[in-house]
Structure formats: structure tokens, C-alpha cells
Amino acid sequence: MSFLTASSAPTSTTSAATGQELMNDITINNGPEDSIEDISFSPQQDLLAVASWDKKVRIYEIDSNTGNNQGKAMYEHSAPVFSSRWSTDGTKVVSGGADNQVKIFDLATQQQQQIGQHDAPVRAVRYVECGPTNTPVVASGSWDKTLKYWDMRTPNPVSTINLPERCYTMDSSQKLLVVGCAERHISIIDLNNPQAIWKTSQSPLKWQTRTIACYPQANGFAVGSIEGRCAIQYINDSEQKKFGFSFKCHRKSGSSTSTTGVRTTSSTSESQAYPVNAISFHPIYGTFSTAGSDGTFCFWDKDAKQRLKLFPELPGTVSATAFNKNGTIFAYAVSYDWSLGYMGNRPDYPNIVKLHATKDVEIKQKNKR
Image (cartoon, rainbow, N blue to C red; front, side, top):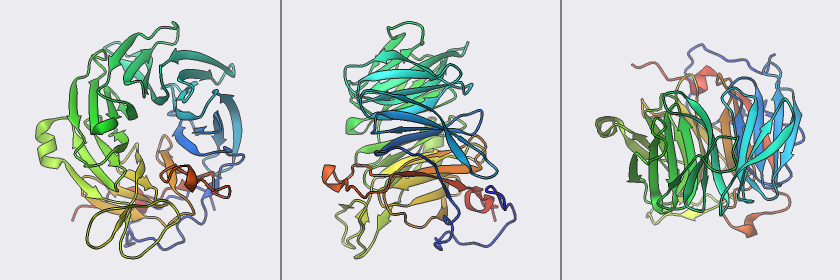
């Protein structure tokens, strides 16, 4: 039986987890030696980049039929790596980390090069195309409260934007770039005019922004907070009024205890809310995943406002997620997310990246009744 047996037949499965869904998921061989901060697939082939606290970016080659995988390349920063992403043509990987540096790695030559420098750790990098000519640049957001663009040929940034606060998360799609900052600030940039912030807003969620993901159509973005909530946002005000909403996720009610991180809310039912660590959009269907410190991930349909699938709890927090180019593989990292500070980092904590073969019944929009 092939690793990627996607069932497209309509079935009457419920969204609840049965415990069997992740049994056949495949573990990436020779994974990182410390917490995994970011994972991303090449937009051209089934190559996966993994950024981790062991100061390395590892690149793996995956056979989409069997799930067999092997290391293809590796390069280093001089401090933990917080973000790694692919160039549009899939020939290069860009990364940023706690050494304040932005680096680029060429797969063909196996050479790395520092292309950027910040005054504080680089929290997020994205490979973007700017202006009407689609000029390729690397965008980097830092705790130094700036967003910088690098064109890979000169040591100085092409442009610097002052952000309202430290960059905590960032994502892009087509000509949309969205930066989530400290104090719940959100900066929206139109990459046709990349030198200026087009629109600023406050997160609709009451607590600190943890992650942002842009829709494939580039008409909006989802925001996840440390308090088990997700907001569906649109760029256009009338669309926002019509379709925008927020919902609770990654929570446990009653007396359930967990080893994977706790933030209690002040509700009377004593429910525990957990950080939403990652949001990833399916490249074909536009549905999305959320993953959290409660050790679970879910698939959702924002247009129907429904949860498509809840998966069984894993033995650690889910720190990062990614779909491959056609959405047939969902990669997720089970590793410590630092939500409980350094005390929560046990020597026996799992540190793995797994590959899940997505089935249409889990991730495709349900037929509208």
C-alpha cells in the first residue's frame, strides 16, 4: 500500500480522533538534536527544510510514494535558527536566527552565504517577489523592530521598514506580506509597494500573537494567539465584516491534565487554553491546519466555519507544520516549544518531524448541503 493513499470517496467520518489516524505516519530520519522552530516544503519538489535550536538547517528529500526520506544537505548558523524558507524556484533556502543573521543556501553548489544582518535575533524570513517586475528579495523580520529586504547581491538592505514592535511572526502569499508584532500589532504590506506599511491594525485576539498564515488567494490571513484562539481576517473591510470571525481551539476542559504546557483561562468551567504554535494552509483546497501546545493538530474549513478533523494527542507540543506543494503530505514537528520556559525542557522530550499522508476526507471542504 502506497504511503500516499488519498481517499477521495465521500465518507461519513466524524471529526473526532479515533487514535488510529497517525499510526502510519513516517518519521524523518536523522532529525534535529534540539527543538524544531520551523519547517517548510519546497514549492517545486518534495524537499523539506527544518530549522532548529541546534543552530542547523537540515534539508531532506522525501519520496512521496513511500515516505522514504534522507538528508540531502545541512548548513549552520552560530546560534539557534528560528525560520527557514524556500526560494520560488526551489533552488535556495533562506534562514534567520538568534545570531541576528540572514543566510542563503544554494542547493546546487552546497554553499551558504550571509546576506543580511539585524541588531537583534531574526524571528522570520520569507522569499518574496516585489513590484510589477516581481523582483525577488528576501524579507526578514527581527526583534530589533525592523523589517528588511535583501537582494542577495549587496551587503546592505534594499529597504528597511520600522515596525511598531518586535516581530514575532510573519507570512506572505503572492503580493501580501503580514507581520505580527509584540503588543498585538499587525502590519500589512502590499508588495507592489514594499517600502511602506500599507495598513496597521491590532489583533482581534486579546492575547499575544503567536503565528500568522496568509491565505493562498492572498486576500487575508489567519492569526493564532497564546490563548487557544484563532482569528480569520480579510484585507478588504467589507469582506472582513461579512466573513471575518474568531474561534477557540487547542483547549481542554474539566480536570484533564497535560504534560505539554498549560495556560489557564479565567472561565468558570476551568478550561485550559494552549498556545496555537502553527497555522498552515492547504495549497489546493484553501482549508487549513492549526497546531498547539496541547500536543494536537486539527484541520479546518474557514468558509464553512467548521472543524474537518481533530487528530489524536501526541507525546509533546506541536511546534511547526507544513503542507507540501500539492497538499498530499502534511509535515509536523513534535518538539518542545518553550511555552513553559526552560523548566519544561526535559532531556527525554521528543524531538521529531513526522509525515502524514493527507486524505481528502480529512482536508477537503465538505459538500455544502
